[in-house]
Structures are given as structure tokens and as C-alpha cells.
Length: 175
Image 1 (tube, rainbow, N blue to C red):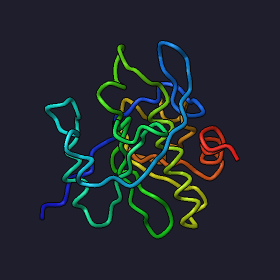
Image 2: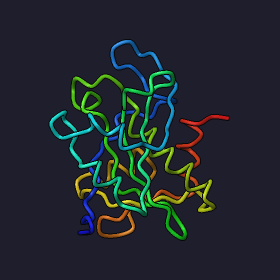
Image 3: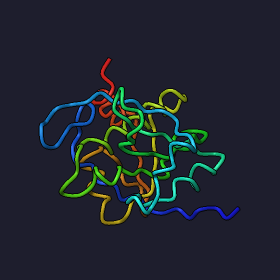
């Protein structure tokens, strides 16, 4: 099987919320993040506005794909993230908000931040002190520094270290 090329991530962190927030009403909704199944991906297709081939992502044995949903509404996927646990950190391959959570008419804010905070939490759970890395599109390097506290370590490589990870986790997963 052909190995997917490393593409720069191009998600925009619209707002750091403590869950996800309805754009119109400002109401916050508690979320769940769970492993996705092939059944969940029946509607996650380019024809429905999704940018990435998530079925291909799910076939990569070293990666886990997680879905973000609102508590008590598991059937509507708010966003997806693909993660790989490495020997000393977690690597974020892809992150995508649902089509209805993108652009000027988006329904919910906070989806990307929620998913990145989850990735940092997973990095702590796996003994990697919250360390997360990813490739960024060049034009978004500064955005990730400002919104996520990420560090640009050269080229398009970004990392979120322990301190930045703790800030994100405490925002989205308060004890």
C-alpha cells in the first residue's frame, strides 16, 4: 500500500472554548471523543464536503482516528483527528472540522482546539509528557504559535510541549 505523503495541516483554531460553542446562541455543549469505526465514516466523504479521505486514514495500522461528538448525540460528527503514538510523543497526521463547522456560516466554534487538547491528553496518558508534533502549512505557523502555544522547530515542523499541552488540557478537560 502506498504510504500517504506528509501534508501540512491547515486547520484554523477559531476559539479556545471549554467544549464546543454554538456560534449563534453562545451555548456550550459537552463533548465526547471516541475511536471512530468504519460505520461512522459512511457520511464522511468528499461529496458531503469533507476534505480528506478518512477511510484511507483509518486503514493506516499505526494510526488511530477519533471523532468529536456532542454528549448524547453520537451520530453527528463535529470533527475528526488522526493520531499516531510514537516512542517519545504523539504525532498528529490530520485534523478536520465537519463541513458545517467551517467558514463564515459554521455552527460550532472550538472544534479544532478540543481535538488538539485531546491529542495532548493522549500524549500524557502514553507517558510522553503531553508532547505533540505535526507539520503545518507555511502560512499557518504563526497562527499555531499564537493560538495553541506551539513551537516552530524548523521547516514546517511544529511541536506542542508540556506547558502548552497543560494549558490546552486544562481548558477543555478541567478536573
